[in-house]
Image (cartoon, rainbow, N blue to C red; front, side, top):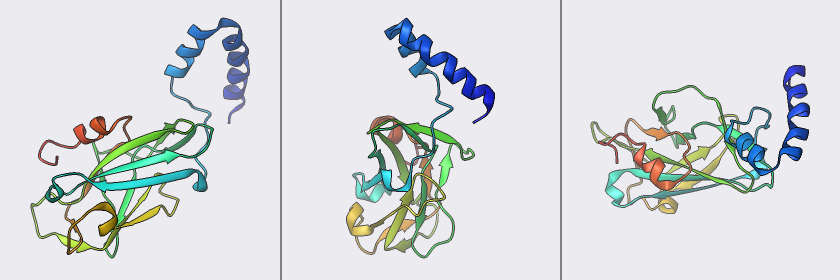
Length: 176
């Protein structure tokens, strides 16, 4: 943390205590810049195929299991067993921090197959909220994908969103 940022934090904190609720609400609306990355053991994941199963859309949830806000990457890193590469974010963007509140949840929609080519089938996918962390592995059966496994062709993922509806709505219309 730079000295300037540290000094600004020290000056801001007492003013929030004195000013009360209005100042606190205003401060919470601004993006946090001093929050540290979530520790590996503090993140939990869920992944479930959304009906209809044939749509190739999986809802991914990340949960902060700690009582302290922290940051994750702005989109999940999703890899597929036996395949190189990962799902690409839509809209195309670079990695960057996204705040995850204390005990909070965020959601992303993942389209595994756009049906424009020959899909390959994999037995599992792995999800991580930080590309430097190993993430959690989900089998095709765990997410509800039918045999022969998870169909993968040109996979994409949304950025993390606050609600399931926002996540699913962020997929391109031909993907949902």
